[in-house]
Image (cartoon, rainbow, N blue to C red; front, side):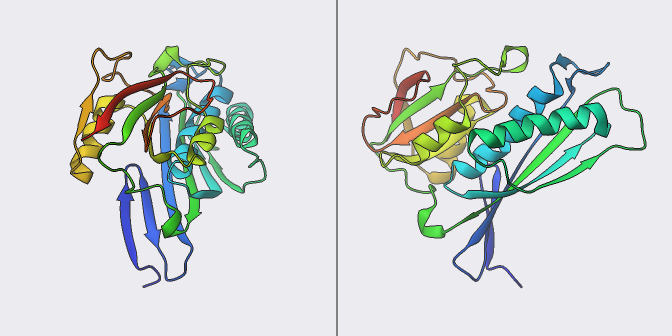
Length: 245
């Protein structure tokens, strides 16, 4: 057997290898979002590529793993939809200076499609001692960066939406113990999942400044567990919502 152990952490698979370097794998998918006849949410394939790849990348970067490759499955024709999706993905990679990351691509070349589908897988590497996993302690403050938004609310230039540059700034902060990108489960769903997996409880500060039950779509916000009060200049909405007890 070429690996020692496989475990999951939220939406990522962590594969421990005999060497000091290990693999992390995440993915995200989207269906019915694009500019085709039967797409429900009408956006440019470029925007679809940006946000779908962003989610997969966030799951890897948030645990302090390093992305090394993407796999992109496009359930649409290569031109123009495939090209536009790939342009969006490459733009997202450029935001974090990863424009040279290898990308494996598959598109639909045999069947005429009337609805857009996309899947993005991100492969990363990590060293166990550097993972941002399992570091949360009682007394840690719970913050949310960004605002939960979904569907037609999601706009590329919206400063309320969490992004990769902000994630990297948080990941590199010594004040941050763990980062949980929030998707369709919403803030409350992610907190409940965290509590059940770690046996740590949390206490929320009411009244809450945002809707913790709302879907955050393509990771438009994230939960931060910080050792002390968080004073980073993030240029994004930052709310203290509770603490670990």
